[in-house]
Length: 161
Image 1 (cartoon, rainbow, N blue to C red):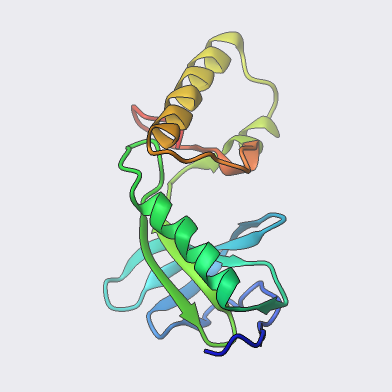
Image 2 (tube, rainbow, N blue to C red):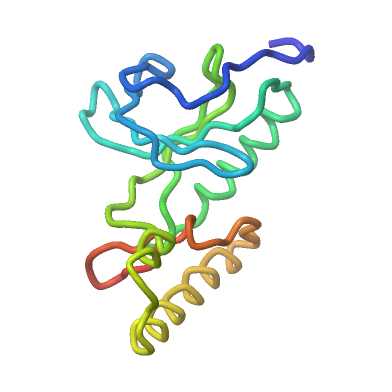
C-alpha cells in the first residue's frame, strides 16, 4: 500500500459480504462517529465475532497504523469485563478492521429504552462499570467513547462488558 489515500466504500457492509476471505457479514450491530460494528461469522471456524471498521471515505497508512495500535492495545487487556480483540487486518475496498469477541445480550442504551433502572440495578451496574473501566486503565488505556451504546449487558455473573 502506498502513502496515497485509498478509497473505502461507505459501510454498512452488505449482509453476506465476505471480509478478507474469512469473515461473512451477518448483520450490523451499530455505528458511531468513528466506525461501524458488524456481527460476522468466521467462515472456517463457524464462530461469530464482532468486526469493527472505520467510518471514513479515505484511509492511508497513518490511519491504518493508528487503528492497528488501538487493536493491539485492546488485545493486551485481559479481563472478563472487556471484549477480547482476536484479529486485525486491512481489507481491500474496506480498509482497516479488527475483530473482537461478540458479547451476548444488549447494550445499556437498549436496556434504557425499556425504562429507567431501579436503584439496586443502577448501583450494581455502576459498580461493574467502574470495575471494567479500572481493568482498562490498569493496562494504561483510556476509553475515549464511553457511552450507553458501548456498554454491553450480558446474562450471567459478569453483566457489564
